[in-house]
Image (cartoon, rainbow over all chains, first blue to last red; front, side):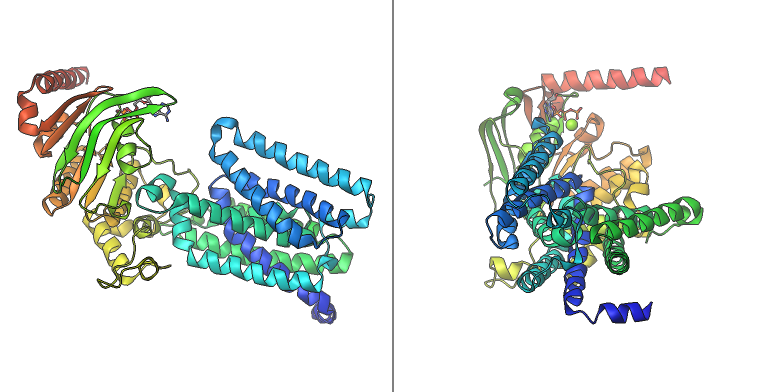
Length: 280
Length: 255
Ligand SMILES: Nc1ncnc2c1ncn2[C@@H]1O[C@H](COP(=O)(O)OP(=O)(O)OP(=O)(O)O)[C@@H](O)[C@H]1O
Ligand SMILES: [Mg+2]
């Protein structure tokens, strides 16, 4: 086990990938709590498909992938937020339209230019080899900004997530915070997308929050637990991916699923957990 | 100048007017009760006063330096999801999230007033309000696992944490037992006596005329606005009180 780790970390590209991945997993888990509770999980999924489309176009134009995908996905995030806030035009259906269209455009662009090759498979399901040096630098900067902003706005994000009307009535600019959450989510998804794959990145947002909500009963403990679960699963997933050549996204999601089932069983089987007087 | 002033205001949903002809004002220290039947537009007016809904006609003016960060609000229904993980303490403290830090006079600007975390004074205020409402022992419990009445008290504590000047309550006693209802009315009267302006929607006309200084009676439009004494002798007031008392007796008969 330790010799495997030692062997892995001899490769600097792997070290870089793991550092970026840990940062992205952390961001995704923190934002995920709010997104899941606000019933915005679909936004994460929609954004990753838009991300896939923009990566495909960036590749076709020979442009830097992140430089194209970040602004496009941020714009899409604001659009999706507007759609889901306005329930009258069936937010979820509109999100599904946008995400499938983006996917179709991405696939069309790829098949007209490079054709379906292993690169495409990597976009869809993730690869640890996807990060270039410049990507890593940008990811570190953006990822740390997401963490810092989340920490600074934590209490207001809680207030807006728990009861948006009350927050608004007591002077919190809820529209601004919803946009902040959408913006941070967009950045996180683009950063994690190539390692985790466009099809699987939204799992990184949804799984840790749902897993911790099985047993934790305080917002703070759910947030902390999600962060820990997410980072641990990512790390195990990367090692598995290195050992078996499995796409990184798939192995990380499999670990997330296993931990989710474990927590779910624990909450069901241990009645003492339910009857505890004080919440964690 | 009054704290709040409505001039011929109306509110509509999708072009259908829900309530209109609202002309009244609330001064600092008043205790205004809004009464009326189901669907008469009480909650709608509340949303308007909170700035959550813009009037479709007329205007609502706020005066005396009232800002949103000093309003406390207890909604009629809170659409908190069934599975939301939050402790009582976290919910009550969130009443302080919108409030700027008390900066020394003169040094007040947007940046110095902004702070990311709750200070010691925020925590003390939250603790005091939990104590006042008898929910201090519940503070580590999970909000979603409390009874309806307990949840109501948690939300009232949160509202009290948010305000120094104006408290808006939409049927605060819904779901409380008679003892808790009486305690709650006393508590609201007490904070009102300490200088907090109270605007409360209530179905309990008895409590309304007992505690309120002013009454606003709605029926898709404004039927009456004035002091409680005026209301008791007005035709609208006498009719409404008669009818609700009759209804209350009917309920007793059925039991
Ligand atoms: N979100 C909404 N969309 C459309 N119409 C609404 C909405 N909310 C309220 N209404 C309508 O506005 C009118 C007034 O509703 P409101 O909730 O203000 O009544 P209320 O006086 O608070 O009643 P209750 O005593 O039952 O709480 C009703 O006819 C209602 O159908
Ligand atoms: Mg109502």
